[in-house]
Image (cartoon, rainbow, N blue to C red; front, top):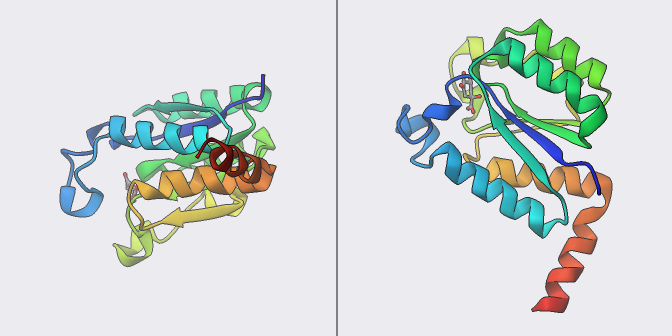
Amino acid sequence: MAKPILVLNGPNLNMLGVREPAVYGAETLEDVRQRTEAAARKAGLEVDFRQTNHEGELVTWIQEARQTAAAIIINAGAYTHTSIALLDALTASELPVVEVHLSNIYRREPFRHTSYISPVAVGVICGFGPKGYELAVEAVAAMSGTLASGLAADRKQG
Ligand code: DQA
């Protein structure tokens, strides 16, 4: 079986739907998980969707991903702007990384304009809310060439 995409969510993202809805929207993390999984199914991929409030747990999951995942999609929350440990772990994973943020971090406070993750990411998707997770899955699929075959399968079914 093909390896899944590891989708990592950092601190406070378990509060989606409740937390600052004007910034992050009304959808819960469970809604985001369902969207992400649906996008993956469409692209012929699987996702392993996780959230933690603990930096070290993210580091451990990224270390494990080297063996178990095909790519990493990560919304590291506030650790984006602080964590050299996450940068080091992502670098060591040698996996394709897509960085995601619900909000457009460049329209917000200056301290959110710096990402320690971007230098190791293939690309960054921010400002599109939960849709960004679907776009990230499509980006991984496009990189691995599975998007085209997933869409072809859709067309056959339709
Ligand atoms: C966020 C942006 C970060 O600056 C913030 O700390 C978050 C969420 C986003 O998805 O927009 O927790 O990563």
